[in-house]
Image (cartoon, rainbow, N blue to C red):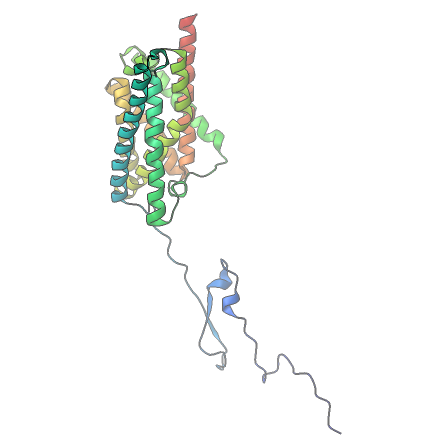
Length: 293
């Protein structure tokens, strides 16, 4: 009578160890980076090697050509917005309803919204097509927890600017901005823009998109300064090109730039910029109320 067959020992040398399929390893962990070298039947067993992950893409991943393309798009978008808004206003007057025409403040707000908005949308399409990245991820416009900290920085910057205005009597200078706000409706329109999409658009363009290029090319200090100067120049016309006011705007831009660089987030500088504008707007409202009283 033959002996009964015994079950095969799973760890016996005759059977050999069963090797897991490397392709079945979960992605994103160490197992996914292990590959087997050589033959498993070698005396010392299979050899393993850990592959290096692909190198991270340098930041910023866009370049000066992208910036030039965006400037062209922005200029074209602003010109198109100016034609549309002016044509709309002219049509209202020509139709015999001049009392419904837009004020200068309302025109300025619509120009910013209709000019910057489409330009940033096209920029997002360019980044997506060329680099496979969204605009939000590119400029690091992400949610933040330290909202109070950056709001406080914006408020402190606004108080510093207000103090400089009082000390050097800059509020007495003749500025086109004063002619822009003639009514409560004008103040309301400017206030909405200054506290919402205005700082958001400006921070995306200057601190989110432009500043990383300068920082990469000439270093953090010089890059932040260069961006702050370019940020102040478009505001020069609003303040009558008084160098003192342009300098103050540059200082505010430096604060926003440092916040953006240290926090690695355009959200942080946008919060600081919005609260900065908000406190200055509150001062303008108080002055108007005192004047009406």
